[in-house]
Image (cartoon, rainbow, N blue to C red; front, side, top):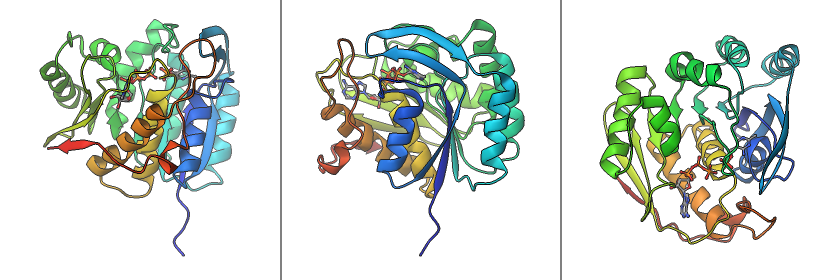
Length: 273
Ligand SMILES: Nc1ncnc2c1ncn2[C@@H]1O[C@H](COP(=O)(O)OP(=O)(O)OP(=O)(O)O)[C@@H](O)[C@H]1O
Ligand SMILES: Cc1ncc(COP(=O)(O)O)c(N)n1
């Protein structure tokens, strides 16, 4: 029997269970990947927004990382909310000891509009963390910040993906089009080819945690040795199903459904490259 694949998420929490570490672990579990987590910040949030945030002391983040790195195999790493430059510096240092694909979700603002990273952290993320990534997965506002470009069309999205690869040295960039009108289309550029992944837009406000879920699914598939374009295709099917069957829970943007892939077996993703 082949060895079980394990994935590590380094991120903040969501006690309401839709985003952050909770979304990542649910996704790993659903994709039969052994899930591990290092908590950077405890975030008191729900479907309506963020109430307060308690950042973990650096020594505690370091101890958590060492506990995983010194004992467990890691086949993929995903990072989400990393709130400050000192946290990023620590994580960069520790990731040097992990030989695994690295998916960076450059989380900056929650769906609710609340800031999750400070200004200094945002700049550090762009300069120092980006070049280490196997794939970075910004939504449109995040891609605008990272590139300084204005993104209003699909052509702009492709341009931003190319810019991130050529200017910042990321291996690949996936620009997510959830914030554009029309079909839900994402573009992946891996330095050689531009891939597009399109799905029908689902008419729902319940999209809390889609970004986290998508990036965690990409990490899980990369951990199983899927080539990146195929990992993204499978992950897109996973997140689309999760949005299709999302839950009408809470008073704000409800959470996605991490077990939906068991029920939504038709895969309506158009992958072109
Ligand atoms: N209403 C929708 N219907 C179908 N797919 C969607 C919808 N909204 C977002 N998506 C898809 O979900 C994935 C996440 O994209 P999005 O741009 O929303 O990321 P995000 O902004 O990081 O997530 P979040 O909304 O949780 O902050 C992408 O594949 C996007 O195309
Ligand atoms: C701890 C944490 N990390 C990330 C997000 C973004 O999630 P989303 O934009 O998908 O709501 C979040 N709300 N909380």
